[in-house]
Amino acid sequence: MRPRSLTRGFTLVELLVVIAIIGVLIALLLPAVQQAREAARRMQCTNNLKQLGLSLHNFHDTYGNFPVGELDDDNGQWGWGVAILPYLEQNNIYDLLTADTTNFLYPIPGGGTNPFGSADAGNNNNATTVRTAAGGGAAAYALEAFACPSDIWPALNSGGFGKSNYLGNMGSDTSGGNWASWTNPNGGTMNGILLQSNDNNKTWVVRMADVTDGTSNTAAIGEVTPNLQSYTYSQTAYIPHWPGGNPAFSGQGRQHNYFRLMDPAYPLNLRTGTNADRCFGSQHPGGGNFVFVDGSVHFLPETLDGYTYGAMGTRNNGEVFTAP
Image (cartoon, rainbow, N blue to C red; front, side, top):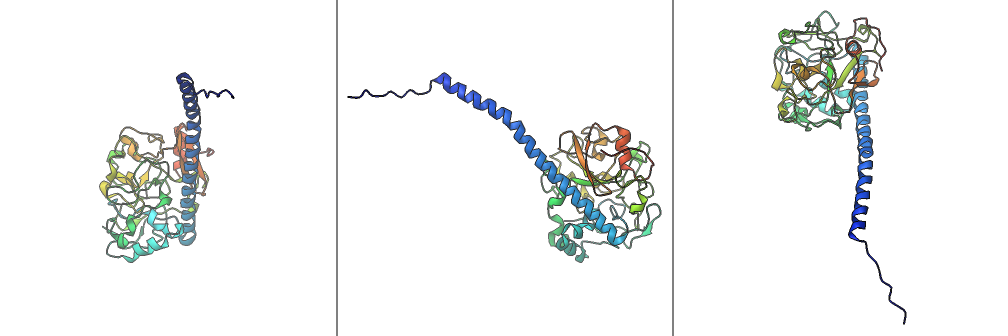
């Protein structure tokens, strides 16, 4: 008779060793996987900003200037995000919104005529406040073009609006460091690209020729994300959204719901303090994405010196530098 072969199993020690090895391999691989995923999300974010930049260009080609940043002085009205919808292949939403004259008052699509003077944009004084009912609910859509995939905000804020992780650059703090009392900024004082109207019927716009610092050196739109001041994850009423001013922050002096500053006093990725609500920031490690006036997208490191960062935010201050 042939002797029976004995099958020897793993001992407890050997099994623990194997589990430990697997754990070490997972620990080594997980950061690489996470980095790969973040790289893909950052690439999608870059593409979103690229599309926004091209939309601004197409708007400029049509009207001869960039869109009005936001209408009226109450900071709760429709803004540049709506103006560029046709160039983001969102004509259906744009048509629904503009056809609803009860909930949507939008004057001349091109807005004002020059960056320093003002132009009557039509009867937009006390224009209808942004509301989700506009266009049969079209204003409440969450649009991928305005959402960074790395962001941690919910897709809709508590008001039912689709969030926006991309806000307009209105330049440096021309209040001289006293933002709290700078309650009436307008196109005559802002030195960025997308400007807020703060004189009721008057609007200000920027043309390509007005960007004398160079279109490749001046940012138009940048990323925003929660911070530890007001725009925390839990305070969903304060999440910026693409149609225009956030009603939770209505009124003069509340421009930071739809615009941000690029200024040494308002550095990229500032998370705490009263200035944090007016700073650009992202969930990407080490910096944030910006689309420049020429349509190029740059990842700006949060370690960028204040002079260069501020220079990228102004269109006509004459600074000399090279964008990264």
